[in-house]
Amino acid sequence: EAAAPPPRPSPQEPVTVLGQIGCDGNGKLNAKSVVLEGDRERSAGARVPLDLSELPEYSLFPGQVRARRERRRLRLRLRPAQPAASQVVAVEGTNSTGRRLVASKLYEAVKSPILGPDEEILGPGRCRHTAVPAGAAQRLVLAACGPYTTSDSLAYAPLADLVAVVARDKPDVCVLFGPFVDAKHEEVESCRLLGSFADVFKLCVRTIVEGTRSAGCQLVFVPSLRDVHHDYVYPQPPFACAELPKEDRPRVHFVSDPCTLEIGGAVFGLTSTDLLFHMGAEEISSSSGLSDRLTRILRHVLTQRSYYPLYPPAEELNVDYESFWGHAALPVTPDVLVVPSELRYFVKDVLGCVCVNPGRLTKGRVGGTYGRLYVRRRPAEGRRENPCVAAQVVRI
Image 1: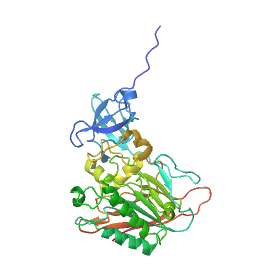
Image 2: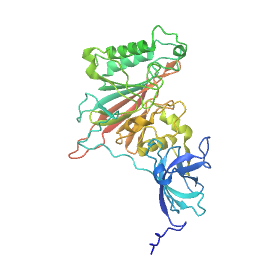
Image 3: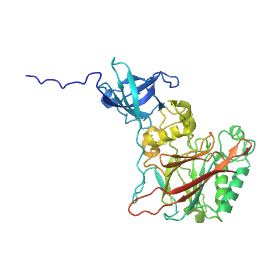
Image 4: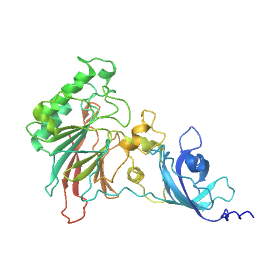
């Protein structure tokens, strides 16, 4: 005698659903075009339209992974082959017709844990350590993002001003984001240079290294997709620059974009890719009260555990998904997240993480801004406390 099939929930019973936010067409995501997509293994990539009309507020973007609780036995899960495409949605709602999920509540994903007291976050492209030892002493970190020339000249005068600031203030670490040889500069586009792109970059690095030698600070170079001489792919490998003087090599660090870096016991997340601009152009939201768009985007970055959770990516971004998960995932929630952007500079506390947009060192033909951070570890026995961080954005 055949066994009776297991009971199935009625269309009105609540069920938890996990899936990826997508768009039902080729246009920009909007409240009427949102779909939830499952993985290939469990749901054969099934997609179902998502009705947001009953939600009091929401914030969604393409690629976001959400778990949802609604009234249907359909289960959608994250597609492991595309970890970037991950806004996980949890929703309570109904699917009485079997054709559309009517959501009544969204559940926010959980951020990554913080680094434990005895843990290291080493891994391919994930963490590099500077020579600044951990301890209770206060550390000064400067963060600046290119371009380092004004739009009408390649004289690197703003960079010379920054080097003078480093020599004067003697920070422990100076983090420099590209572009160093900007592909969008008019003279670069027209190839009106006295040497090759690589030669100009080497001259730029030599100027920085020699100009900061008296300060003795650690230098961290983060590449940019706008660096004309470097690999145009995301995640982006570190610069290759082997012509450093022997005495300077211990304090010069070439890292990837993105990168998770430990400085004096504090965890820094670094990326030169303008994820704020990219995600801000694709996010849709509805809120009954005051809502800060940049804070929402930064919350998504931390809870999606990815330096670039947008999928599909911006058209200008060439993403290597084979190396994405090993190099662009957030292994832990950083103490400080530095995200240079074309948008206005800011300092924000988001989910216990200090997020800083230092702006760009130049704005057209005039000088721009850079970031200054004071970091101090708080003593704690047997556990790790978030460091005290004071941050400001300074005009060059």
